[in-house]
Image (tube, rainbow, N blue to C red; front, side):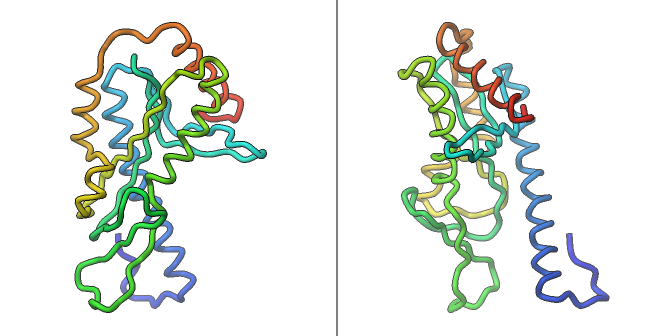
Amino acid sequence: MKPPDRCRLTAHEAQVWRSFRAAIQGEKGESAVAHVLDRSGLAVLHDAMLPAGGGRTTQIDHLFLSPRGIHVVETKRYGGELTGHPEDERWRQRFAGEAPDAPPRLIYSPVMQNAAHCRAVYALARLVDPTIQVFSHVVMTGTAVLSPALVACTLSLSGLETLLHDLERNVPRGTLTDAWRRIGLACHASGHQ
């Protein structure tokens, strides 16, 4: 998507255009991940809004249930080159053709973002059973080239498919399904599912 060629955008209009374009790209990535998860046969929740403490909420792209525990998925669709470390709060993004001395864009780490989502999920799950495991997965669906450290802490769409394929297919039981129900009820209470 490109803005119209004939008109010159103000700085504010250009920012609005970039935000709009980013939202569209994000939805494309989330839709691709949702499709893979829906085909898995596992219990799945998309666009889950959960309490995050202090009267706040957090929006989680996808959740799924396996016999091992509850899985929290953050989807990102980036382009360019991403560098950083899994423990960095900000990753650096550069695009081809930029001046070598141009400062990189700093983006909030999806790993850190998803860690907060996992805390919200665990806060609900531990009310049922504190031994329930919550797993974090960051799925990159765009064209970004990631540094080796970031490749090690993220999944591609095909990597997610492999993970799903390798999971046990036993039906989760007991406190794990009770915790999943509690999370589903919390999503419904906030008007999301």
